[in-house]
Structure formats: structure tokens, C-alpha cells
Amino acid sequence: MMTEVEDRTSIEYQRLTWDALRKSINELVNKVNAMNIKNIIPELFYENLIRGRGLFCQSCVKSLMASPGFTDAFAALVAVVNTRFPEVGDLLLRRMVLQLKGAYKRNDKHQLLTAVKFVAHLVNQQVAR
Image (cartoon, rainbow, N blue to C red):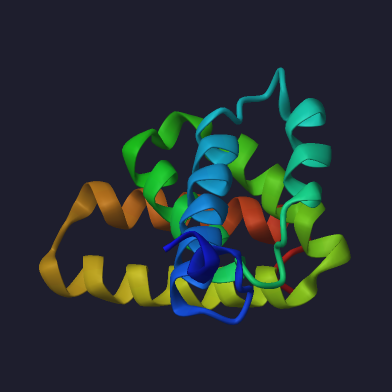
């Protein structure tokens, strides 16, 4: 078992590194607020955001829906990440549009307003043009 985990091409090794990346990104995104965003951003860039861009977007959307009061902090975080990796901002916008459509179809006012507010913050931060 140990030799299989040490082999970088094995499925088990890939799964372990993927889970570690997911946990690390989730932890960093969940800690974000207006006061500590400057400390979180370098730690986030230390992670492999190219590989984990979907994980980052998923974590942002889940954290946003759980705590809509931090919409401005999440938008600022995405704006900084977007300066280095524009494909991450594009992916997040696509997912937010899908979130908007789903909330509208379900007539979920709370989720719809949260998503609209987040997209508005992204426009103000010039992630969406």
C-alpha cells in the first residue's frame, strides 16, 4: 500500500492529493473576511489553483450561499485571483449564471438575491465586463 501511495502516477496518490487540495482550499475560503483577506490571498496562491479552479469556485459558491453577509469579501478574493488566473473568474461567473437560473426556476428568492448581489460585486470589482 505504501509503495502505491508513493507512486505519483497511481490513482490512490492522485485521490489523496486531490482531497488535500480540496480541504486546503475550502479551509482558506471559509476563513475569508474583510479583515484577514490580505493574509489569506498569499496562502491561496500557494495552492495549485490551476488544478483546483473548480474546487475554488465550488467552495466560493457554497460559502457565499451559507453566509451572504461576506459577499463583498468573496468578490474581493475572486477579483484578486482573477488578476493572475482569468479563467478562474470566468468559470465562477459561468457557475453563478447557472446558480441564478436554477434559483429563478425554483423561485428561491434568498438564493437568487444572494447570487445577484455577488454578480453585482463581481461587476464592480471588474471581474465581469
